[in-house]
Image (cartoon, rainbow, N blue to C red; front, side, top):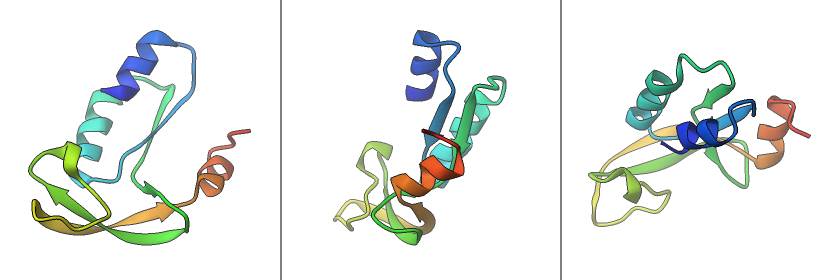
Length: 92
């Protein structure tokens, strides 16, 4: 929803949409595949490059790098620093 909102507000802007959760990422790709200005990245923006464990909850708003009582599953996802993200996508 956020990527689509920003695209509606700034239709000529290049948008890098970062989403770590696999189900949400698939939805992001599906909802934005017709918009060439939006690039989807499946990753966590973190303090280090590599991978981390994402704890998935029933509500996507509760997904976290910290395990909570509401965690229903955990998945390993790519992680990257903001500097790496900017360098990878040529963001000044």
